[in-house]
Length: 128
Image (cartoon, rainbow, N blue to C red; front, side, top):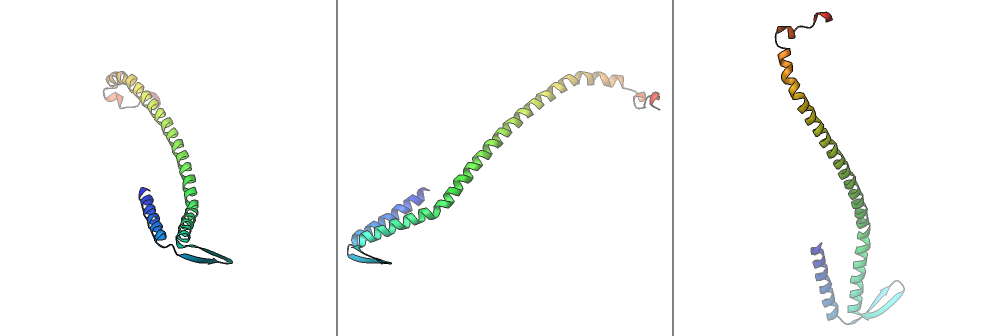
C-alpha cells in the first residue's frame, strides 16, 4: 500500500512541475462549453478528474472486500467459539478417560488369576 502512495506522489509531482512550466492560455471545448484558462489549471483539473474516476472505479471492489472481510471475521469468531467448546469437551473426555483407566487398573490385575487355566477358554455348561 505504501508503494502505491509513493508512486501516486511521484506522478502528482510530475504533473505539477509540467503544469507550472506550461502557463500558456488554452481554450477547452466540451460539448457546448468553451473555457479559456492557463494550461496549468487545465492539467491539474484533468489529473484531479482522473483521480476521482479511479477512486469511483475502485469503490465497488473496496466495498465488496470490506463486506467479505466482515463476514469472514464473523465466521472466524464462530469457529473460535466452536473450537473452545470442543476443547472443553475434549478436556472433560480426557479427564473421564483418566478416571476410568485409574479405576480399571486394580481390577485387571485380579481378573487374570481368576481366569487362568483351560476351563476359562470353555463356555459354561449352562449355556450349552
